[in-house]
Image 1 (cartoon, rainbow, N blue to C red):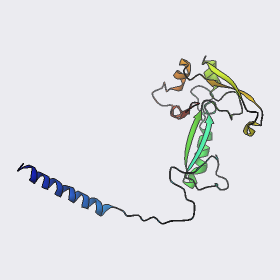
Image 2: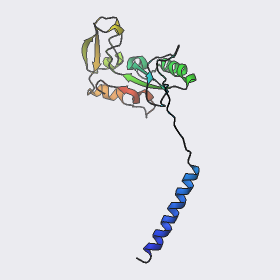
Image 3: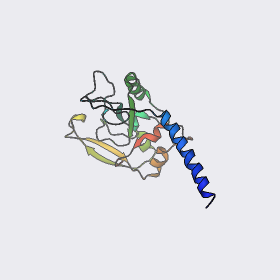
Length: 178
């Protein structure tokens, strides 16, 4: 007990000195109430425009885009990054980040395949469905589509990175129900 008190005293003194040093380096910020809208960095409102021509309805720090896997990898192992690069380039001057979702099924797409045709040509099972008829984004007509079977071994093999992790788009995939 006799050695505990001096150790405790030294420890508390050391802690007090560290706390004081931290206070000396602290930056105090005072917020003031405003009546205007402002962008909340990394969260809050997002824009779904691919190009910020004109203004956005609300101030935003993130633009959010979705696109089909078939558009980003039309041929197995061959990627089309141009439209993504174009979106990033369009928003960069405004200091706006871009969040993305690569979709494997999309009821708003204009065609049969959201996942690439080569996936099904390789033998991946899928489920056909009709969507549309009341959706003005696809012209108000029902369009047959196919969604991959997410438990299919071919889907699982093609969906994961087999090349040592150099396929960056593999991290962004959205499966129905996510």
